Length: 261
Image (tube, rainbow, N blue to C red):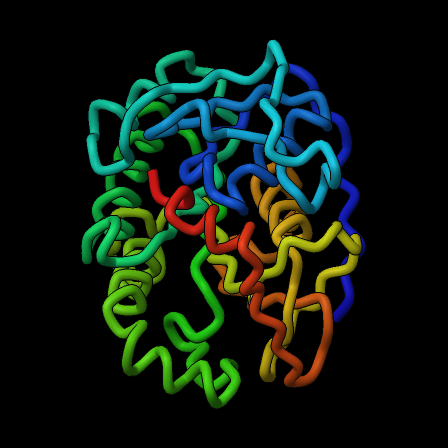
């Protein structure tokens, strides 16, 4: 299934971004601002919220200067810090783009941080949320390429345990986020390439996809009133089949730690 996502300019709306200084979070923040929205971003290090490579090319890694960007210093594992983002009362939707290595962020950061976001959303009556996990999480294990399945059960077992618990906060009956209008987004191999504008929602093995395209999909999930994946778990890639391109560039490695807030 091929989707060409064109999210319209929506002035006066705000999107909250968690994981905003990561490679994906930067894309979400930049694209939302580019569409005329306000962005409220929780950042452990606000100075690291820079222009993304995929959407900005040679201007990447320079500061995002926009009067509609509001940066809050804090960490997602602090309920108090998370609530600060919502206090203005103008949040239309939330994108959770948390990540990072377990040794850097701890074994329960995704679950704990997402739980804080859910509680704040309920308190401030915010319904829409896109949660980025990964191909292989939840019931999508068989959609991951063979070698990635091996990593999931070995060196990445801890992070996937946390991802699965993060998803369960929405998907299990009686879960705290069950009644929110959530979309769990499971991308294939992430790259820092420019956006293609085409996203494949796949039932089989997923190939690679740029973070810029994932960001576009996430904005659709929180802004499109007729979004067809509410309370669903789409696996997405920009190519069909089993191709898998893992971004191992120096720039991607450098930004990996920044994905956790």
